[in-house]
Image 1 (spheres, helix red, strand yellow):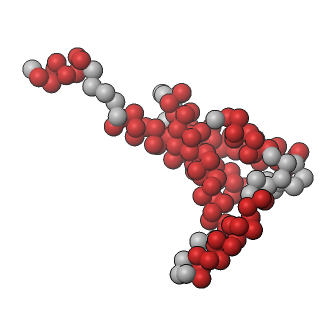
Image 2 (image 1 turned 60 degrees about the vertical axis):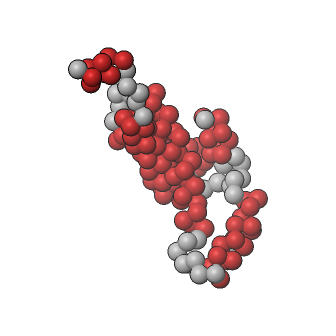
Image 3 (image 1 turned 90 degrees about the vertical axis):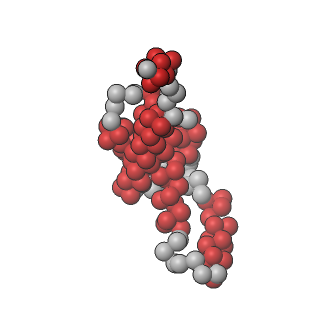
Length: 135
């Protein structure tokens, strides 16, 4: 998980550069066919940042079980801040953005909340719990 994230974060040019023309064409098509204008490149990029960090929050929440969702969010914010600082200092063609930190942190929080939900809902019943329920 960390290796793909590092490749995306520190790729020398924006990772969407090869598909930006296609994405613009798809968005223009959608707008011509009734999709609202607020569904634009900015929304797609922000959504991608959220989705990119959801596995970070999910795995971190499972790896550090006693941690709460807001602590995992802080961890996601720290990672995102380091990524943005690295882009600012070392990558001329990339743009460090506070909004990326916000969306990445949101993704980590969503991932942590999903992990908490999955571990509570999907926890198998132990033999002892089954025996006590029958009595």
